[in-house]
Length: 105
Image 1 (cartoon, rainbow, N blue to C red):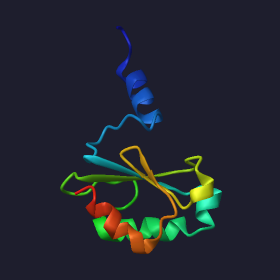
Image 2: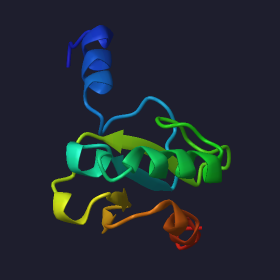
Image 3: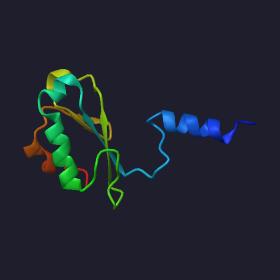
Image 4: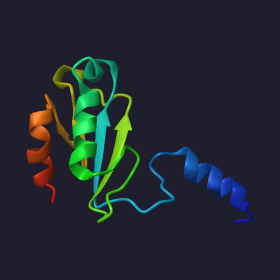
């Protein structure tokens, strides 16, 4: 295709849908938009990080989960929201995190 490798790299690193690192079997997105933020989304993110022993942007050592954050999922009325493999979970709390994660193990 006569495209320089640097151009392919630019595209691959610009779009979040592409990853140069292996991703986990399950993709977790935690919404940190304004509505979710004021409802303690940061604490939910911290709880997930503790439960999975992984930081945002990372993948668990067993490659079961990849944890990412998003600025808004568009479901503000049910925030704080978490999305796992395209399925939305609203009104999330730190108490619900471990039970939710076990559904995907």
